[in-house]
Length: 118
Image (cartoon, rainbow, N blue to C red; front, side, top):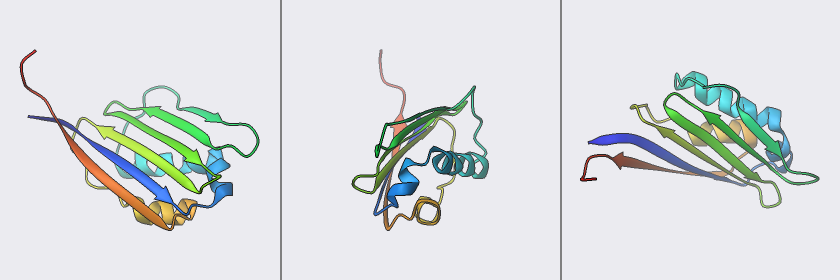
C-alpha cells in the first residue's frame, strides 16, 4: 500500500537575488499550492538568513508539507513536497526556470509504502 509520494527537487544556476527574496519564494509556494490544489494549514513559516544568506520556508498541508531551502552563494534551491494523496507531477523545471532563473532542475519522486508489521 502506498501512503504518499515525496518529491525531492534540486534547482541549480538560480538567480542569487531571487534566492534571498522571501516574497518571490512565497510566489513559488503559492503557484504550486494553487496548481496542485493543495490546502495549507495555518500560516506558512519563513526565515530569511542575515546578510547575503538564503531563506527557509515551510507550509504544513492537509496533504503533508512543502518546504524549501535556498543557498544564494552557490545558486541552489531545494524543495521537498510530500503528499499523502495522489497528485500529478508539477512542472518544477519550467516553473523554477521562470520564477528563480534556474538553469538545471532535478526532480526525484519517491513512493512511500505503508503496511508491514509494527
